[in-house]
Image 1 (tube, helix red, strand yellow):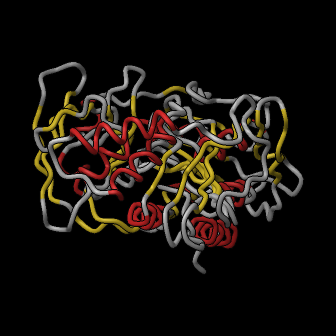
Image 2 (cartoon, one colour; image 1 turned 180 degrees about the vertical axis):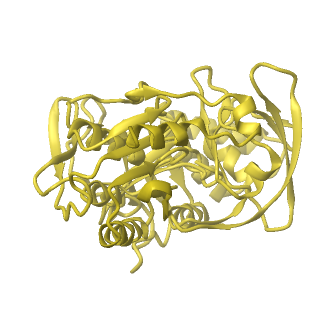
Amino acid sequence: MTEKGSKKRGFFTQPLGIAVLVLLAFGLGNAFGAGRFPVGAQQSEFKAVSGLPEQLNYSQVDDVYDVLRNNYDGKLTEEQIINGLKEGLAKSTNDPYTEYYTQKEAKEFQSQIDNSFSGIGAELGKDKDDNLIIVSPIAGFPAERAGIRVQDIVASINDESTSGLSIDEAVKKIRGEKGTTVKLQIIRNKSAAQTFTITRENIQVPSAKHEIVEDNIGYLTVSTFSNDTADLVSKAANEFRDKGVQKIVLDLRGNPGGRLEQAVEVAGQWLPAGKTVLTEKRGDVTIKAYQSTGPATLQGIPTVVLIDEGSASASEIVAGALRDNKAARLIGMKSYGKGVVQQTICVAGPRQADGSCNGDMLKVTIASWFRPSGENIHKKGIKPDQEVKLSEADIEAKNDKQRQAALDYLNR
């Protein structure tokens, strides 16, 4: 997620998700997306994975430990060993969205969800060849200002190859104190590598902003689904209604996702109570159907949703819900394709009043989500009704053909 994380995109719900939240996020270094944040520790509301024993046989682990203890030529602490074991258990899933966080990492993850961190302002992800890529740079922040683009391959960080590096490991290397620099080697469109040296800044941005543009069109941009998103979108919707806005553009480009409950509330600005926003399933079993509770302030107003390769998880939930409920037309490029849900569970120490873990935490994939149409978009994305691609020349010239296509459609 932006170096907010792995842009592993994701989403969370209350009270789970990061103790229970559902997240969708990257960048912003971590996987941000659709997620839930749980409340407690090891307790689970789900059935255990079939085939796994109730207790593990640790004899071989003890053997490896003895070999390290007696032969390793270096410094190791008991804490390093224990953390390595816990991280290894999470990695054994081969799921890029299931990760173990130490207490420090858990706090950093929480700050990412709250849209407050120090870094370059870019969401990270992986492509089909397991290359570390830029999912989306955050507008107005160091990565974008330096010229970093969507789908850029990050070949190295501070001269260290990113081959085999997880998204979160890369995020840790990219993030750092304000005023310090990080050097990225970037490969773009299979051309020769370019080197970018970027100065880190404190990154804290409101998750949504709005304006009324030409022809009395309401233009709403949602960059992530954070704590403030539903409130900001509600204010925008009320202003659009009060000022007689007759058409709307909802810009979800480069949005890596975030909190599930926020995405459901945002969709409810267009959808009346009772309309399905998404359904969660484990295997073929439906866990929960999320339905709109309104207030449908923008119901019936012609709407275009802009999506691109950087739109993931929670943003895909909203785009899919509005499209399937015939509340909006999608324009842009096929979205990222993150159709799984993560939950965060505190595994050491109690959960604090703000929902964060006062100790170590596990972020684990608990379900898949499906659009109202019944489709799971994982690794497939959502195809827009009208495809509009931005070329390198368009980007350099700041010629936003996707935005213009949305305005042209609404003004037909």
